[in-house]
Amino acid sequence: MAVVVYTPSILSQMNASLLEVFIGGNINRKFNLTQGGRGTGGIIWSAAEILAKLIAGCTDIDISSSTFFDIDWRGKYIVELGAGVGIVGMVLSLLGSTVLSTDGEETVVDTIKESVNKNILGGAFLPLQYRWEDSPHILFNFIDKEYFDIVVGADIIYGHDATNWEHLLNCLLLICSSSYPTKLIIAQTHRYENENNFFGLLEKYFSRTSVIQVKGKVTTPLTALGGDTGDVATVFVYLYERKLDY
Image (cartoon, rainbow, N blue to C red; front, side, top):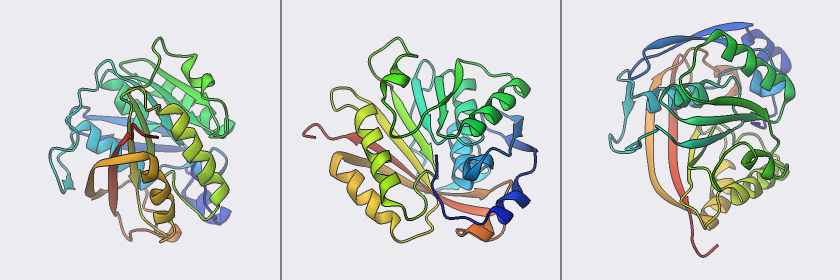
């Protein structure tokens, strides 16, 4: 559930009920996505679309490093936080992962379910309402192992509400136990300087193992809400592992 101070009239203009997004690379298909859920999760954000393209191995994006995603997605158990329209989780599912696609807003989860009905997916994909302050047992009840291989989030660090950041950090600490090799992937379009405050807190408990800058065209530019202008977005993708001493 990305948190943002926004103007509803701006989002409503972008909240077309149906959006077509093409993801090339190893996916090479068009997705028909339902938009319109309550709040910021009802639209596709730049970081989500760029991360989906990166995971799919698309060649129409500029990447600062080609070795970042040396990951075999087949058979991985993945939870996506703040999934929005669900494009990242859908791509992961088509690559063979078992995905819990979560968002804190029930109406957003409903739109993900509508999108699933429009798109044939490959692996297991479950849309689920999950708020960052909820117990992680809600998530672990749906998998047959003691940990998730990967936790992923795109544009989930947004706005100025430190309480929501605290909920997110606590959520990540509970899901990414230091007892297991869970990886954390965060894709972020940097808009505000105070985002660094969250990353500073995060890196007290997580080691940043890699970061890359990715540029590419996006379907729905969000110029009015900050970030890039035009249809080209710049997204930073971070890879973390939990520190053993925390």
